[in-house]
Length: 329
Image 1: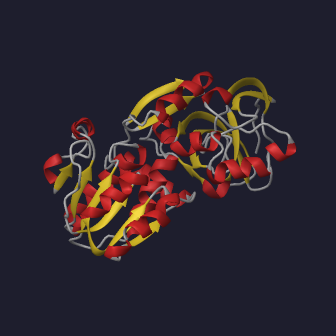
Image 2: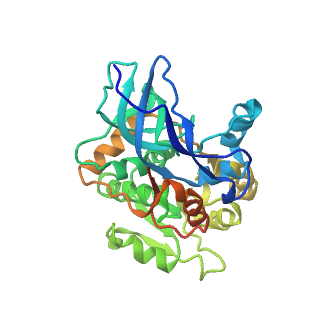
């Protein structure tokens, strides 16, 4: 199964780690070739995520992979894990040219007009979901679903979560609110007044148990909550441990903070676990279907052309985004 496509493409590359100015726009990059089990996709949109700029800075597993592979071979690297677009060539029967698809692709390469992706992590996009939404969704949607599954929330439990207006946070919050009737859980948020008002645009705030304005309170209340979903980590994460009951659970999404939070919560015998999402086509398909059915809404704050990727990174790094920032090819 093949289609006609160019041999070269535009892409954003890095040849070193650093600030946003290391991101270079190139229009002469080779379109990747297909291996068995792979699909070539003409990308329409690619979401950007905090892991992208951390990788660009030389931090974490993504940067280590680039060091060990592209940089070790004196080759440039193309960042980006989110992608949605149209199949142009395929080695597998499940995907044909013209199919609208999306993927969380931990091999990277999504800041480009074309990318190859393992068919096992690729999923078709429902007709009711546009490609911009699909391109912004993979990392945050997969992470939100898998984190809630991982947390294993029991009926009636009180859940406190931080950063509920970010990419992962605003989807996680909607999934939790959807579980209120089913499981009778209680939800308290940690966020600023500005973010709390914005959250009211996509959920019914009256359904929440409460709200903690971290900008106003020196110490957090002892809520005796069963579970803290910490999407921040660091000193903010340590401060938030006050809301959890003795022997309670903490799931921290920046998993690098898990050990520090374990030490900080040792006196309360808190069960602290770090969480890392993994590409999974079935999980991504499930979240896409929830969006198609109107059960979830993905907020997109801004869209940048590929050539302005450095500006998009700088915007995300401010930490003020509400929802997602997306690149358009």
